[in-house]
Length: 82
Image (cartoon, rainbow, N blue to C red; front, top):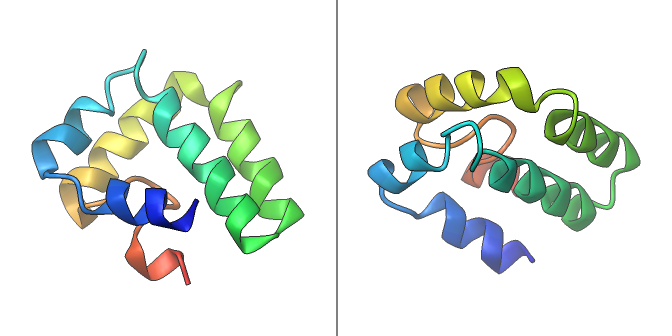
C-alpha cells in the first residue's frame, strides 16, 4: 500500500488537480484510509473515514487548494508517509 501512496504522490500536478473534482475526490479519501492502515493508527483511519463520507462535500476544495499550494492532497504527501 505504501508503494501506491508514493505513486499517487508522484503523479503530475494536472492529474492531482483532476482528482480534486468533487465526484472523483473520493479517491483521495481512500488514499487517506490506506495511509492510516499503513501507519497502523486508528485515529488516522477514523479521520480519513470522516473525510470520505461527511467531509466529501468540502474536502474537494481543501484538497484543490492543498494540491496547488503544496503539491499533494490534504493529509497525504511524501513527508507524511514515514
